[in-house]
Length: 371
Image (cartoon, rainbow, N blue to C red; front, side):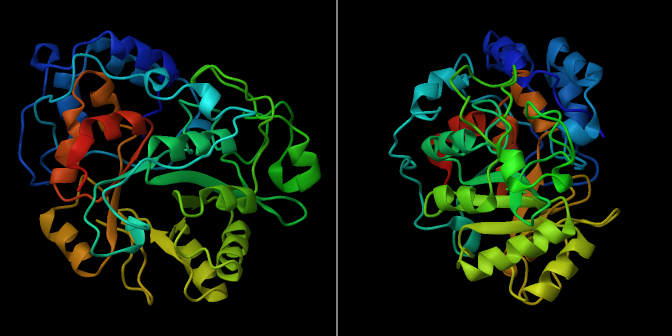
């Protein structure tokens, strides 16, 4: 598994000095068909400047702390259609709009669909899923990041869930608070009061701003902010957190707002507790997609891009299930290297949703073509 960028913010500014054109090396267009013979990993070697590819290979950040357990290879990109330079977060949204003290309103810009597209089989809009909410704009998995994601018009904010010692579901990736807060210790050993006494640490990757008020949010806080404005995809890190989250979704009728990403064992436990829990399945090793043989079926299924083809994607659509692909380890790097059309090629291949570290770039290159 390839590591995440050691400093995505720094590389984003570096990439901003590159020209988004064929002069910087665009990969060969292969059309919409996805197969085992086409991969972004191989095309990125040809299309990405040396700096972007070297930064990816030299990262020493641990996998648990900085990347999801996603394997990502897929189709190659087409020619660039973007402007001369990619926009930075500061170009698109000032931190004053979403940092501590921002008064809102936190309302998304117009989208090419009504309601929530991920729950509507008839909705064909290309959907953008932001990894760990919006870590280039604010501390990862924070309410400030969620406010930014709403204002940007991101469709789905992805986050991670764990459970405190007193049973509260919270949004935090790591099993400990050491990396992302000013404290230390295991999440499972801290009460909610102890956890929220800690401040989320600002990191060099995100835009400058006042984030001193940010604390590890609860599911309740995130759902209250998200409802009606953005969907939440919650990666289940602990089964008990997934079950508790499913019960919260049921009890507060959040079926349109929140869904849970789970492996087969986690999904089974969640569905045993809440039979109609909204879930996203992920593929087991060697499988093309997450399981679809469930009743009710999952809202979303993760696809393994090195195996998936048009027939598989068509089958998902026929079942009313959205397909989702992670681009953290390949297309994001290709886009930063000067070829943002890689995102478009994946949507054109039939993928419904892309999980990205750079949602603002995906939205930018999609422009008016989302529907």
